[in-house]
Image 1 (cartoon, one colour):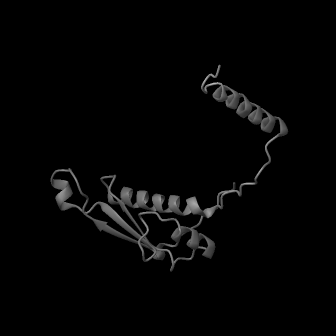
Image 2 (cartoon, helix red, strand yellow):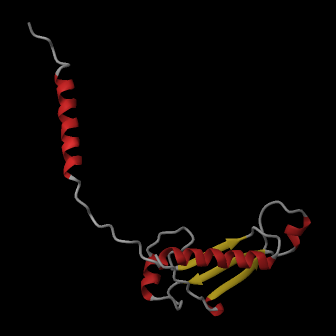
Image 3 (cartoon, rainbow, N blue to C red):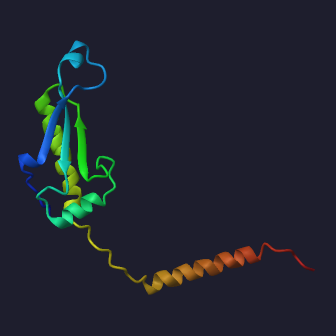
Length: 135
């Protein structure tokens, strides 16, 4: 499968700095280092097929309105979290960018069918021998 990378213009991605949750001492209460990334799928410049597959994905990060919301608070720096959020967005889009290969149904081989039926016959004989013994 070939990978298709889509470039997302900066004006389509809204990045907001927010305060991170959890432990972190004084720093967590003073500095807004976490990032909230919002990406509107419908208003984006992505191809229509990719938009439809994204909306049909059913991912919890995609709201009912078709907006991808990613929160990144892994790093202590704002830029690190911004890069992480963008990386996750690209990963999400790449997951639906390439269509999975269609499964071509195949026929079982003659020997595998024969082997399966012989196994069933053998098993049936074993089970038939478990009945009541008549004199």
